[in-house]
Length: 191
Ligand code: MN
Image 1 (cartoon, rainbow, N blue to C red):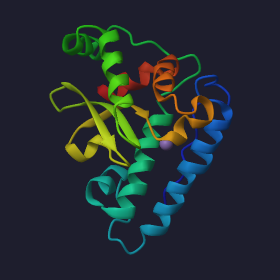
Image 2 (cartoon, helix red, strand yellow; image 1 turned 180 degrees about the vertical axis):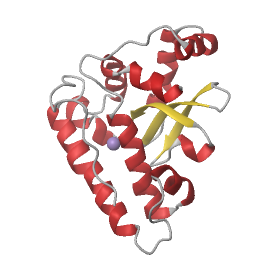
Image 3 (cartoon, rainbow, N blue to C red; image 1 turned 90 degrees about the vertical axis):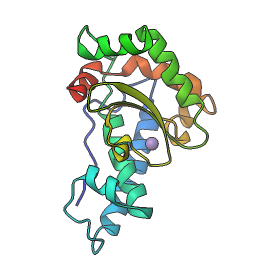
């Protein structure tokens, strides 16, 4: 049985970027529904007892969609903190600067890829096995683990992630998310 992850911050700690109301629906209703659905679908599927990442890599249809959305949201919700935490000098920052020229240039491309994703999905920063970084656009419930990548950072571009706070202004929401990213979490994922 999978369980709804606990949030590592208070319900209003991410305001005004993510309101308490949005967090309540997004974590308490949308993610809870994916957890409940997966727990109903898994018995008899042959995938019981597997890790979430392995289910996402092996499953299709409803199980893939719900398991993928749990994995995506677990990584999404645990990458934030009140006020954000900056990316310090280190391997990840050096790799970003090496590939994009500057941290700001990376941020610009990341947001542009999120804005440019048609419909519902996710934009991801992931690492290849050799440490090289890649930005991917993932439709629906997809996750970069299905391509052998290690997912590091993600922006949810499903409308349920921002519509209550930003309505149709997806770009404004994505730009604002930088304020609450906990880069110490992203660095740990990169190691
Ligand atoms: Mn979502």
